[in-house]
Image (cartoon, rainbow, N blue to C red):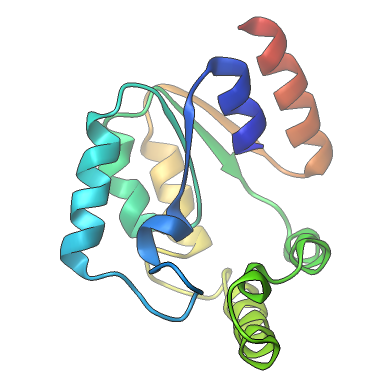
Length: 155
């Protein structure tokens, strides 16, 4: 979705995984300083679409955003999407490590409803509710497809 919206608008796509994790796999975090520098660079950029679940990274970007799209899917839909997408780590790590990372991702993602931190549904809902500009809450893949279609036509 981020890629389609960015393409329609001529924007850059920022994947928060690439801000948070070091290159070479999703097993080594960047330093807080490196992440802060990357977030500041994004904020200074004029045109971007940011995607990801890292609430602590999204929070400082909200003040610069013109629009917020909250993908509020049920767990089963997220789980199926993760399985169909497969492990991004498999492209970067040895197969055994990639499988372990993917299993850890599935476990982590399954806890979304129950976490009480900035990577939780609770926090994302608060960000969404407090956002005062254009905002959209999409509940399933059909909503996403329709939004991308409609948004592309309106540019």
